[in-house]
Amino acid sequence: MKHIKHWYSLLMVVVLASSLSFSGSFTAQAAPDKISTTENGRIIVKFKKEVSSEQKNSLYQQKNAKVISHNSQIGFDVIQVQGKSVQEALQEYRKMPNVEYAETSKVSQAVWTPNDHYYSSNQSAPLQKMQIPEAWDITRGSSDTVVAVVDSGVQSSHPDLKGKIIAGYDFVQNDNDPSNDELGHGTHIAGTIAAQTNNSIGVAAVAPNVKVLSVRVLDRNGYSYSEVIANGITYAVDHGAKVINVSIAMSTPAQVLEDAVNYAWSKGVVLVAGAGNSSTSEPYYPAAYPNAISVAATDSSDVKWSRSNYGTTVDVAAPGVGIMSTIPTHWNPEDPYTTKEGTSMATANVSGVAALLASQGLSHTQIRSALEESADKIAGTGEYWKFGRVNAYKALTSVH
Image 1 (cartoon, helix red, strand yellow):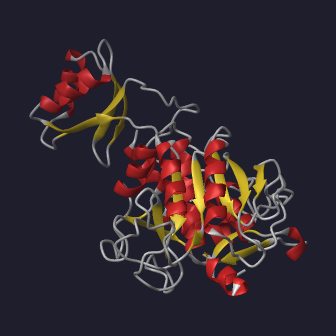
Image 2 (cartoon, one colour):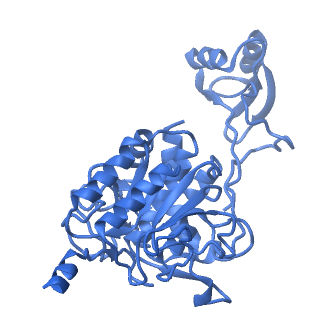
Image 3 (cartoon, one colour):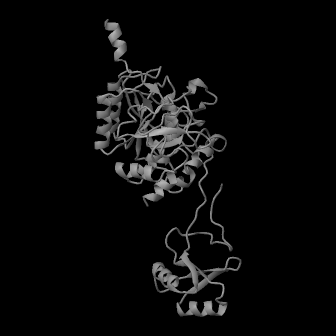
């Protein structure tokens, strides 16, 4: 009887994985060798077609404006504002009835493209759906930002994770070395979030400059107890995590787990959790708790992955199919990387975006709001998830 009770007490926690351009502005004329990213006093003015060159020049003289360049194909002038602010000049030109439009001369920058081996062949498509490359030109994260991966441990000696992992605690072995990732799941999650990037090997991370706090709560088979996961979450909160990735799900609620989620939120920490891989609209936990961000998985066509959970308790979606990342080196010493699919992988992508936002000094409420309100309303929004598929660039620009 005691043996039976033991097995009933074991929570069948499911690991949420199914398997263990260059862009810039076009200019009609050559741009200066060095472009200032601050206000440069330049504005673009386009007059209506009936306005003659003599009339334009006369007006510019009256306004003490210097013409820097002219585009004859489109018909706009770039002028240097003198003796007033850009905003004052814009207001003046926009009020003129013979002006079609006036706007600032905006600085555009080439999208940063990392040189990691698998970036172009395996990673660029899902990352581009979330506009990660554009987000990288705003921030690649901060080394002061810590994302806790509460999972199966993380191999800190992996060549693409060296120097990125903070050793937390192993709640399975009850020691301070959570690097023995027998399942390989946590190592894959950590690589997606914060692998060494632009180092000519392996993969690029969503938030390349952040750190990962490794907290092991899953055994080699991917199981745990609710109180162990709760301990992992509270440990992460108390040891400096700004974002917590929990790619773990179970079909039955547990008060101790909800308390841990609420504890994280009360301390200003964002907890991102996988919705589950059971093709059901039934709630899975901890993702379904109100103070967690629940994540569904989308495929390469930007539609719901067939096995992803969905429904009213799911907040956002993210790419979760064919996600290339790190695995323990002893699994494949020559090439310790593989693709996986599941809401675990989607959760890691969202945690990475949350880390980019946290690196900008945003609060947990601001991060959640930015993620949800800027999400792309792809097919299934409102039915499979509330807000849409996460868009990193839109999230970042929405708060600036």
